[in-house]
Length: 317
Image (cartoon, rainbow, N blue to C red; front, side):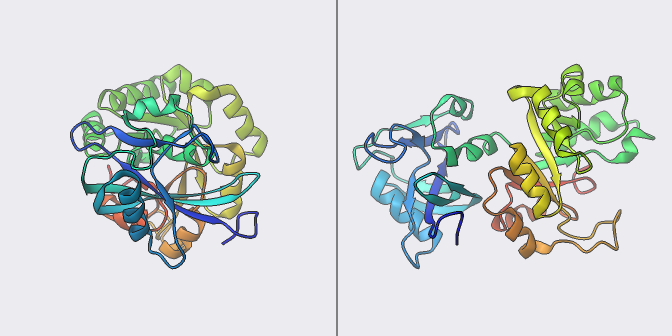
């Protein structure tokens, strides 16, 4: 494994939520260590030949006095600092025993997800801070909605959000008034929304971000992000390593990587398959959503292959 240095430090880190209020547990790095004073997700170095789950259980017991009962993949990030390269394997701890405390003298505390944005983190942790504000499921609106919308589209959209799709890409050839209506319905149900390719349109319609389609040039992508600034969420369509490299260069927050499987709209196009998807998705500095022939039932396998979540049309609408 290499990311610009001869060797890479393999680290496992935990996302631990308080069972009563959902706050996230963080620990603070000692001042004398690399990135001292920063807050971080607790964890540590994986020993040679050690399984990730075993390494996480050992580190959390040594650092916090916790006993891990269950955990699952969240995302994996590769990052190169001037002095070293790291691969951070984040795991969600879904069941644990014990009251966390800094057994090595380090401060530990519980924070709301909203508070994370104001805390200092090592750079490699930043994509996870963003990803924690994103849902497991992303809805892409069907093209047919812009042609002959069903009478119950508002109910169906609200139901999709209630079922877990708290991020919605408003795909389709909609006029500004329709986009505004769609955005308001989705947001009222508890979702954030994306419009295609246009930061000004996002502001005018009250959308939360922009989805950058694969036909845009690098200059067009840079202009959209410049126009939108830091207040918007940026998504990008990707199909291969070249497009993922463009997404890295643009500094987007998430990508939809497709197609995992053949779809009804492209039945003759071979899908990536899960192993190729893993090769492309793992290590990216942004959340990756698996798109194409997947549904909510595929979330577990998607996570196991490097995805933050799953995205789709028919399976979610």
